[in-house]
Length: 169
Image 1 (cartoon, one colour):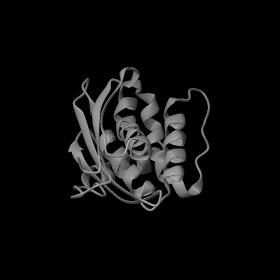
Image 2 (image 1 turned 180 degrees about the horizontal axis):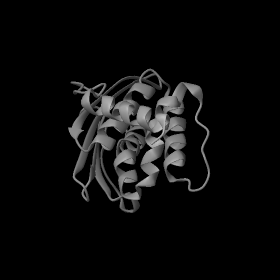
Image 3 (image 1 turned 120 degrees about the vertical axis):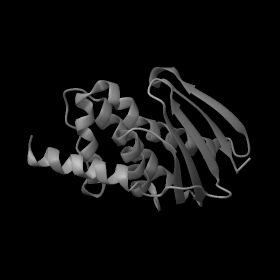
Image 4 (image 1 turned 90 degrees about the vertical axis):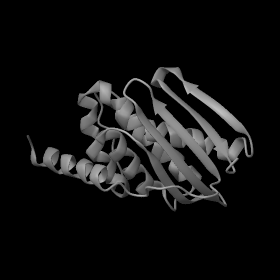
């Protein structure tokens, strides 16, 4: 095992044992729930968006170490970013996780994502890492386009189910 693998494992375990941004937001702009029924991972994101900037994000849920670490890292990286920047980060992460045979270049300010690259060695675990990111993508899309409505979403290819509640409703 290489030194970088050890560092990545330590980072994942740190985010698993001490997840960032845990909790709930009383009146979020959007509340998004995502579930992976195959493994039982569940994540609920509470997101406050103000002037197209993610002012706050909280995560509540249960899941494996990969799912929890991925959500923790994601919340750290998107908090304070514009919705556009967060959307680009989502696409970069998904590309990193789903592109085979090509190393996706990660900008220095997003280097924490690199610790999750090793998950690609275990295809069954990729969905665990993607669940918080896919849930965030749905929440941001809903916050921009469906304000005030209840939406149910299913992404059959990712085996995720969830619902989006906007404006705390």
